[in-house]
Image (cartoon, rainbow over all chains, first blue to last red; front, side):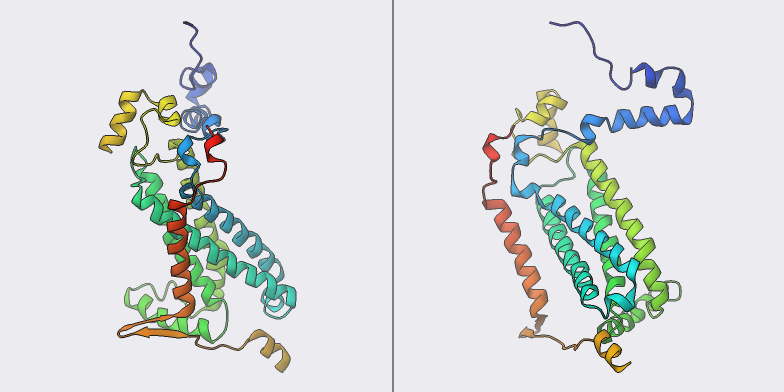
Length: 238
Length: 55
């Protein structure tokens, strides 16, 4: 039995030593404690992750990557290009269909995680950021509908105008103002979606993927991170 | 100008609507919902390729 104790981030002299009285040192200590590199980019996952039920979150992220990449191309070239040219139509359609896939994967991911009670084991913030990312994505997709600049978008805008006026935000978030909605769609809302999704993924990495409800107490992830007794308690009571 | 406008405004139709009594839904929306339900069920029952060899 070895008596050598490996330094943990909390006892790491780089963190706990002279530099930790500055905000940079304290921040480094906090990040090393909560997001150590082996958690951020793990090489192994527990056995239960080898299931299609664990695929759809990353499927939604892949969809989001395509949404953002095609959105960049659309923004670089502008409406006169993507409404008229053949390649512009293609990229515009790619933007639409990657959004469709993003939402389909997102909703299946949400259903699966709901029925797994994925907020167990101190993962409540992971669940909340997932829900917030869904809601912000809906608003972002709504502003995208308004930017089709056709009769569909005009109809949708003025149906929504009544609802937004009724709740008192219509003058501030004016769906009849296509310039304002364009800015919301290509700057503010993508930043919001990106930030919330990034936080969600970081929280998944920090807490680990949620085990199935009937996960064995000998499961690899639980065995490595918590004593079996504690792991059993987490499954039974949370 | 007319060519530009016609290119920018492709033909729009209301689509196909299916109705059962008080329930009415556009075919495209119904297809998306059915696809999501099928994906959900398949994710639960289909074996994951190479799953047994993983840690």
